[in-house]
Length: 316
Image (cartoon, rainbow, N blue to C red; front, side, top):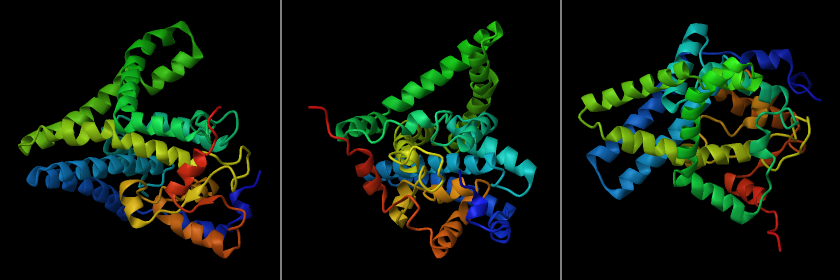
């Protein structure tokens, strides 16, 4: 298995890995600024177009919060450790019903075992390539809220049912109950209650279900699936870090609605996982300058990747 030291020198990695409290704060303000700006647009100029635009923008920023939480899981969002932990959990994870500590445990296992049988994310990537009809069904379930509602119900069930099962000594139940226990769910509900309170004080309480919960159950689910497919779907099933993960090029419009905060540079992230997200384009340029382009798995666009991930012929 090849490692980052084969591609970057310590002198190259050191400046790329430098964290910044200022940049972390800017990214959080940018993300929440788009959320509240999109809500304001839809509230001040209510019509089907602005409502649809708000749902898409906010859903993409909910993915943005997940990406910033992901940076925090690698201690890369802020230079100050306490800021990293608090903001990564309460300002990024909790509003989208996620828990930073549980995610970190899960995600680091993914990095250790990417695209192997021990990878906890393998069920997300192994079914690809699939058929065009199968992919369309999945995307329709996402954008219509079916996936989101099912996952939220499962999360609630785990929070209240597995807490009792863990006492029976089942290791699997113990692990799941730690990740989705009642106190963790309560913290997420408190964060959402605070968001509801802010909107209620502004006189638009109804913006919470329409422009926070609805995007969370629909557009966020869609872009989350597309992100997962682009990163590890229809790639080589091996331990080669240039073949088992994909970087996908994204134009500004795609970045706005589908791939915020440089999430598309996933190959570079797997090479050096503690790089802040805003450093990944520079790492990508360095890899190209070193002549690694022919070895790297790169998608020219998300559309191309989705076509590749759904090119399995339908059964006769």
